[in-house]
Image 1 (tube, rainbow, N blue to C red):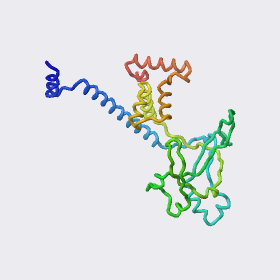
Image 2 (cartoon, one colour):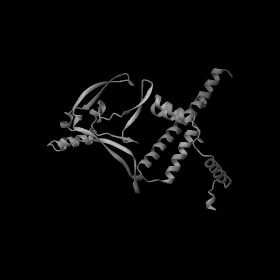
Image 3 (spheres, rainbow, N blue to C red):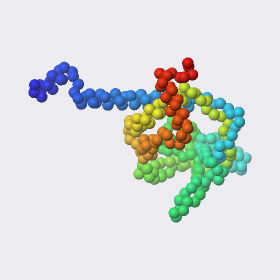
Image 4 (cartoon, rainbow, N blue to C red):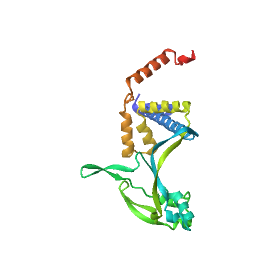
Length: 260
């Protein structure tokens, strides 16, 4: 049978060509990844929605730094107004030491410099968004400024508070008083899904399908996950215990030995 007759016969009989079959397999694989991505988002959302449980013994974990009203401003007549504005533009930084310094390289030497902390600035999209909580009276105290963005290679508009001197930084111990409730079943599902994605190197494809492309930071994370050895940072006795537990689990036909 000639080639053109064979093609006509395939079209009339509704048989799929080799290329169509490969395309269907690829589309089915992508649909499965989309479902896995949705399942991962749902599991993490459930984990975030778990209630907080108060600790019997609160403990300190580093330090936190945030803005407060200056003493003379707090005693003035406009204290309530600037306090309301501060609740909308305040920022918080955390540090393991009280000095809030970071390591920086200068003239081939590493020195410690203090971290920069400013009040919140609004982008142009945030400023025009209906979700912006600033009132018209509060917007008067912001000015428009264009700043060069090295990542986007263009100027971006920012709206900056014009009286930051009314606020001063305050350092306080970062006390942990509550912890997130742990759901063993939910944690098991998340770990099983994470292990499946890591073991089969599916994170790159999933992130590319979700975001369209990967930036340098995402690509670096994907490469680290791809070449990450699951046995790293584990002691030998922990690895052997997990091995024997899995071997006993498989020998019992997938049943927990405690259920006997």
